[in-house]
Image (tube, rainbow over all chains, first blue to last red; front, top):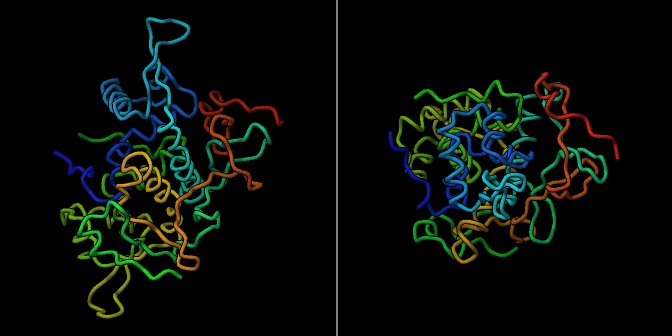
Amino acid sequence: MRRKTFARMNCSIARALEIVGEWWSMLILREAFMGSRRFSDFQRNLGIARNILSTRLSKLTRQEILRRVPSKSDRRRHEYRLTEKGRALFPALTALRIWGDRWVAGPDRVSVKVIDLRSGKEVNEVRVLTEDGRPVDPRNLAVIPGPGATRATRARFQAVPKV
Amino acid sequence: MRRKTFARMNCSIARALEIVGEWWSMLILREAFMGSRRFSDFQRNLGIARNILSTRLSKLTRQEILRRVPSKSDRRRHEYRLTEKGRALFPALTALRIWGDRWVAGPDRVSVKVIDLRSGKEVNEVRVLTEDGRPVDPRNLAVIPGPGATRATRARFQAVPKV
């Protein structure tokens, strides 16, 4: 079954998912953040089929989330490294981890903790902020059209008056 | 093709994706955050096939991310509302939106903006923090086993010394 593409939807969540929302892609990125670089590292740590891993790594490389570089220790091999675009997915992955810790695993079943090496403190919060740095309540928000809104998006989300 | 389940992986990102990582699930949740409640609202705003929408709504309800309640205006109809567990996905969805805005759409093609109604300011940052509220750099982190780590997870992630 050919899956409907999200790429042409007038929505950044849809566009993001079109690129990183496929089954396995986020876990491949988790591995990259945890230091996996070689095909064999990803394969061993994920237990993923080689053909699927190969397809996903190619797509992530084509989308410039990973880049493929020669290995420093053996120039005949290559490695996959996160680009700036890839590293920018850190808040999304961390938000999923923290949600899974709290709402799926529960405190006694948390599998790993992420520690800030400078302070030794746990990394366990993702805060949504306004442009002036204030935390927000999801029940107190409005959606308005942006500069790239289609006519349908404009019709749906009318501008709210400035408060 | 039966897809490999992530549910038994010793990882909260995997467990989260097992629940909300299926194609369409995150966009159904986006709709719920934007105020969609009825089956017909989700269907119209997403352009999703009815059978897929029905399957996804059932799964999200079973997982207690949405709850199914009688409609206030017409008790013969029902609506889907976010639970506390569902609302807790707000940072993950916002992180994906902001990443998509910046790295896929670009500033001139942003489709919608989210506005905090109290201040009128844009909601455009997701910050990852330590338990004492400090921002972190993803290149300065370590992973250590948690209370629910399996033997394999323990072997992979050795405890780092407290700084």
